[in-house]
Length: 194
Image (tube, rainbow, N blue to C red):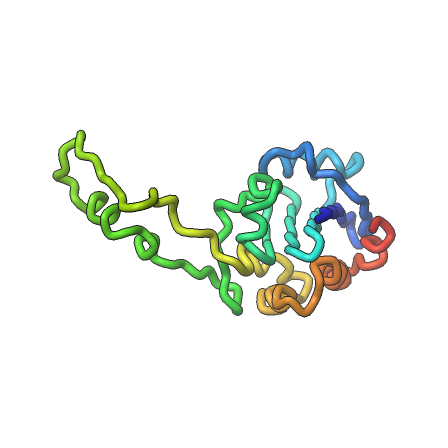
């Protein structure tokens, strides 16, 4: 499957777009530096990176002037398995429900009873060993579905619900990104670099 990434930068009321190669960016901090360096001489009011993995998922990273980056991903499990997991800080993205609010599942629900009992027992001898039957516990699996800041386009008139609705499978990731660029007023700019 192929990846596509574009950087949209807004200077006053004008958007500029360019396709970008994120393969050399290692993590979220590197992505912020990359965005700032990629934006010509002047820092934009807003920069948005649109990233897609063909037929699998899309992600939106927004960086405003003097703010921390905000990230939304259409499928947390897909992003977590990709080469861009560290770049999108997939480990810190929380799954979100249909209204955009975080969905937090109890952490111990997926832990086998043997492990939970050991963690709860503070009086255990330091040398005590816990043997799990059949296989080692590797932690809860990463949930599928949207994750991150679903309200990152609210000031462009798009609710969290509107962004999450793009994740329902009716649109391809490429079409979802085109829709998002249209919301921003940068559809033509995105299409020019595709």
